[in-house]
Image (cartoon, rainbow, N blue to C red; front, side, top):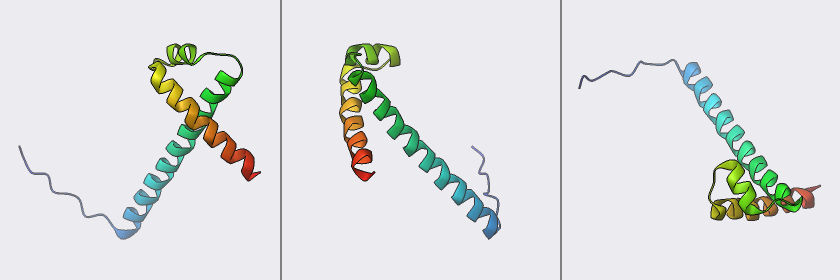
Length: 81
């Protein structure tokens, strides 16, 4: 395997790349929180965890875990208002 030298990036380019990575991670965390809350809401509105699991291609255990986490996140948001 050939060794590829890393390019020397200017400090401002490294700073921008770091900021992009941070924003991407933040967006992932927000989406993950919203996903778990949506699972909680779906179950609250009458779906079973098995129906949620089937719709999302998850195991029932994973859907149940996400529902529990979603409930906690929902409660945190409600108490923060």
